[in-house]
Image (cartoon, rainbow over all chains, first blue to last red):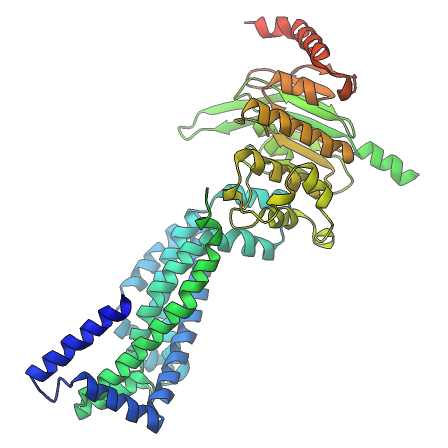
Amino acid sequence: MVLLSFGALVVAWHVGATIWPSRSFPAPLLVLQTFISETASGDLPYNLGITLCRVAASFVLAMLIGSVIGVLLGSHRRADQFFNPWVILFLNIPALVIIVLAYIWFGLNEAAAIGAVALNKIPNVVVTMREGTRALDPRYAEMARVYRFNALDRLRHILIPQLQPYIAAASRSGISLIWKIVLVVELLGRSNGVGFQINLFFQLFDVAAILAYTLAFVAVMLFIELVVVQPLEHTSTRWRRSAA
Amino acid sequence: MNTHQLAGVAARLRVNIEEKSFRSSNGATIEVLRDLRFEVEQNEFACILGPSGCGKTTTLRILLGLDSDYRGSIQLPGLADARIGVVFQEPMLLPWRTVEQNVRLAMPKPVRDTNLDSLFSTLGLSKMRNFYPAELSLGLARRAAIARALAIEPDILLLDEPFVSLDESTAQQLRHMLLSVWFERPTTALMVTHNLQEAIMLADRIIVLSERPAHVIGTFDIRLPRNYRNEQVKADLLRSFNEKFAEVRNAP
């Protein structure tokens, strides 16, 4: 069904490109040819790899920092009341502003790029994880206290399983947001990666190459979703499906 | 020899709560416990019996260390740091871990790999070890909670109405199971209940609490071993309990 749906989209695209032939609207076959030649030259895999690394680094950073802050705010009402305006502030700073400022303050380097992307995502993670922490059942924590679970066991068996749906939600929305911002970061201040390449092709007006890079990246993300995220979610919610 | 005596001294549960109150959201103070004093001997099975809402669960929460906002003192059996096995009103099993994982997680690290076959088989859980709590009936989940409480080899066992909201035959089956695991390794036990029949069947001693603010009205000792408590004996015990506490119950 999924394949059929995508197939229909490609056919529609092909028909459209045949009826209105234009340099700025290449047919699917041309995009495929560009994809193959870019892959053969090694440019596409290299830049794709660089971008993926940046996405992964920013994602891990944003999830870790955001979760810790979110759990702390969710469990300490006073701290939450104090820091909530900060969260709202950061939620509403445009991604572009954070990126530009990061480059100005910390220079055009990798740390600034990854940090800026992570910083864009952290407030979202904080809000989701704070909600999750407020929904924790205190009775599990009490049980763990009476039975003297150590800190690691509490984290592994009490906290994370209860937060799991919120972690999944934050990851889902996170990964799609992050990879879009990573492209902007690359466009503005890096000399490699998918974003940089797209900027290059924009100046050359090479729409086929732009589409080839974009589709390649989307395909990779789809692959990650189907092969990594969904099976993982399947395993971690096994106990839920069997509910009597 | 010396340490043994010391253990004997410390093996008793002592409760001496002078006052415990709750503040409601509109600022009113509700006094729940007032001068609540009782003791439970080593390896004695005691039941706390009282009207609903009189503060039985609050007393257990204080003993569990989950509520420290009270005046008075408590002393748990065992030396410095008593190990508590608890069965809450709800089974409180982790839904994302299997029955066996739930039991083993509660056990201290060094003994986590102990063989639990006999405990599971006494409680009729041998086939359920790899089930998730959502796949169990309430009765089975309660058994798993009892298994967890006993697997840690506790210094004291605290039970908060563990047989409530089960049908009578299931409850009775569970009571027998609890007794048989408790007999295998007796420990000081304190069970909260409002079911007098249940208390007469299980307890060495029944501690009767008053209405709120709760204090001990009196205790009812049953020295007869449990295997002699047949229906006739239980009916007699019930009658003498009612005679002893009739005036209290009928008091205004």
